[in-house]
Image 1 (cartoon, rainbow, N blue to C red):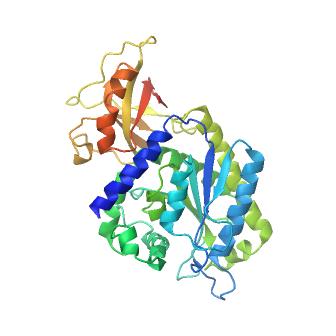
Image 2 (tube, rainbow, N blue to C red; image 1 turned 30 degrees about the vertical axis):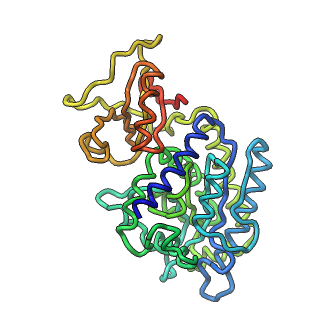
Length: 371
């Protein structure tokens, strides 16, 4: 399995490197979950299918984005009722060098009371004192179990078992560079879905969905209501409500695109102002700055996660990171230099350990991508 993981990392590195200089949101891939022989969640009366609802919402969303943002290429992982593997969905997004991946789903539960929408990004559980596989695992296992429908899935996914917690450990490797932008879009979607036809907001969380792990760009998975809940189901059966869900997600996309196109590391939302954390005394301070403004220096970002990590943790592989808090995220930087060239020379070696690492310029409490 480790060998397969390394091959996946190498593939994603090639995509990341080829798209590294694209600071414009030019391509979005929209993924209607399930399809064909995989119906997804089914209503109790067996009359409604997740695969049908999400295809309609995703197709409408694609049309709305094309109309609102004609400069954006919009690609659907399926346009009809066909089966597409999880790997095939992610591979398409990587091949298109997408700047954003949106996977659309409908939730389900053995009980009829759970309801509402939720937004998910790849990573560790966002709840304090809960590990990677503790949060939302019923949803995660159900969505990841789709691979069991594939022929020879053990070989395709390197021995990944959706029911084995140890299979999720390797997903930590892919949550670093894209997490910040994934969270930004997730928060925009959450904001715009509030007050919509699916009323209950279940929040944004980090969870190990396989389809998100295999993508090499910011990615979110949306659960737009519970097909097992009578009220949510009634809402989803109305075409007008599905169109409204698509419109609200489109508005979130427009808002996110304005931020993304302005700068990849745009200002944090109001009330979430980035704060520079001074490194502990036993860590080397950033180098003396010689830029024209007397404040800028360069570094390589390797992580952007919600967890405050020990600078001596094994995840840093011997590097001593410079840490900046940006709202609820902690960003970790190495390869610090007072010039872009000085930091850039470290990139090849750093990317061997952190495939999604990228160059940034830090000025005061502002961080912008520098490549």
